[in-house]
Amino acid sequence: KNEVEQSPQNLTAQEGEFITINCSYSVGISALHWLQQHPGGGIVSLFMLSSGKKKHGRLIATINIQEKHSSLHITASHPRDSAVYICAVPSAYNQGGKLIFGQGTELSVKP
Amino acid sequence: KAGVTQTPRYLIKTRGQQVTLSCSPISGHRSVSWYQQTPGQGLQFLFEYFSETQRNKGNFPGRFSGRQFSNSRSEMNVSTLELGDSALYLCASSLGGSLETQYFGPGTRLLVL
Image 1 (tube, one colour):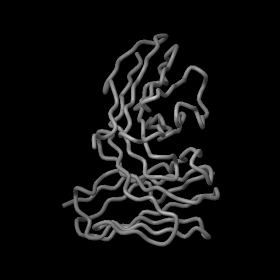
Image 2 (cartoon, rainbow over the protein chains, first blue to last red):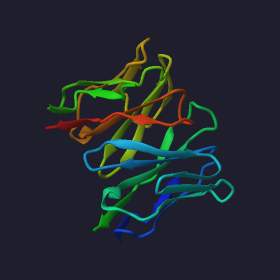
Image 3 (cartoon, helix red, strand yellow):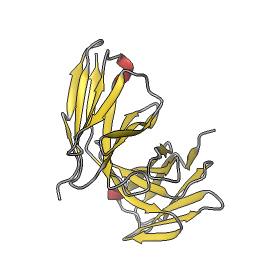
Image 4 (cartoon, chains in turn purple, blue):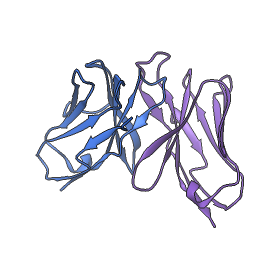
């Protein structure tokens, strides 16, 4: 079993739909990263959170440290949201840990 | 502020050759991490440098090595290239490490023939 599991692995949505991507992890962590990768390779950090909820525009990320689970929500999805979304957790409680990645969720939003 | 830059962006090599990739972090960032991304394995951690010291290393053979200079710029080297080394190599910089926002470079796409 992978230390970081994402679901679903692939997701197709219609423009305007509400989207949820889930991330579960088995290691103890103090923070979790959500990343976005567009075709062509570039990766952008969306959120880093250690508790509760963060919001940026139409994106919302939540985390439950006790349940070892995080979700990324996209409201009013748009074709430009089509990308691979990756969650990553540090392997240690200090800055020197490495990032362990989920396998990614490939999202396609149709107009 | 300029973003993270990586050179070269594309590279074609043959088996047995060696390659050096470069990463220039955002000014002021002292942590640089390197990752390999392949369709089959996804993103995998190679190593992380902080203030010229390797602080962490992933599960890759010794053919993969790196270093960081006093200006925080980092290089990674792969010797005796194998076909399986074909991948996108990404670096990311941050102020202090994995508990902070990571800023990724555009990557170097390496093809080994």
